Image 1 (tube, helix red, strand yellow):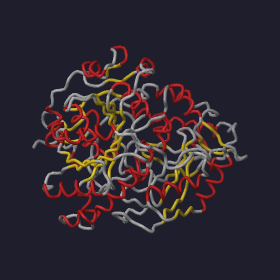
Image 2: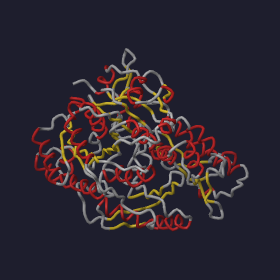
Image 3: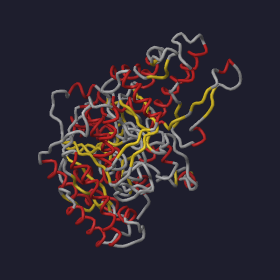
Image 4: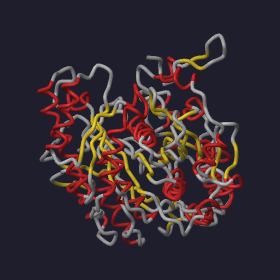
Length: 551
């Protein structure tokens, strides 16, 4: 079988104008970025405001291994499978971050014969959204420094500045830095740091803004520091939000591309689910719901991560209600959680406790789950069938093998039909906590009802932040937990379905523009680092000038 990059490079793509027309978009509703990419104007929403919405399907996963379980591949497979059975699907995915592309996970365009194309463009610079978000974030950082240097009219306490710079790369050396060295002209000496762009508040703001006016309002509401009097200082007070909005006005528009089988795909925003809210943009979902019968959207990592945030944050922000959940499971991951990555059927049976826990999380939201058993090369028929059977035994509405990687949409038709059936049934969707609950109680609800923790321990700094945010009137915001994706707990070494554990919250950040609070749990970092064997080592150009090694 050719590599995923070879399959993408050999594919015959349809002009994006044809994809847009088939999706029901008018010529004046798209802006071309070359022959195979376009942005969708937000006027497409205004024109269809009174139209009915399609059914919303969220794809999530069990607790993954470090390499991931093929959730994007499954999302594309399902989309192509829905197309193969005669439905009209639209796919919504996040934009890849260059950090993971050149790190351990590689790209985020799917794989094999279930990909979004053009794959190289998507995984690299695409339409420039990531760069625009990073520049807007760092413009605010420079305005903060200049404001303090040139008289500091708002009375910012320099040691209270919380606004960090960002870049779209894994650079561990920038997690904690000192700025302002070299004399007074270079600013106030203080400790600061970088986040990866996917974890920045600006990324979150773009991802949940409903329109340009909402974007401008949210950017203005960003809190960058406290004054000497203890009052929050915002981007609007620094006169930064207008210029930031101008930098982001095109980045707010969703990007339109296609699957290998010609279904429309909206790829927009790229927050990580372990350190951010982990879902594509709200405007992409809203546009897709007006265009398709079924909208397939992917949440990052496991159901305890991106799906929880999709249901508790994004669905609240957008008034969305999902029709079904697809839970990706693999024999490889169940063996990992069963304590024997190279084991057999017995390891899968032990690891099925993790599968059962995730099915319980989904049912706790009142939703039906279809388990997609994503088949990897080397998985035996017996292993795939065992995972499928265990899923049904543990409460899945249905479970089907996904062979899209090798067979394209034809390998996911059974999965597609199971999803159509699940989406046709009524559900009793409800969120984990009411917004008016105390901050600590909302954190505890997620930890106990979703993760399965016994307790939550708030370190003194976290307690101090929670008290301050409550005094500032931020107690009604939803919670965006930052924790490891490798365990249901905040300890990445606790595999399978741990019990009797405590979640430790060391700090809490207020994203007043995005509109949520971010508890930092365990040792989670908001700036990843490259590993010993980075994917970047294998990426190169061949003698014909073609990219090689990208995956």
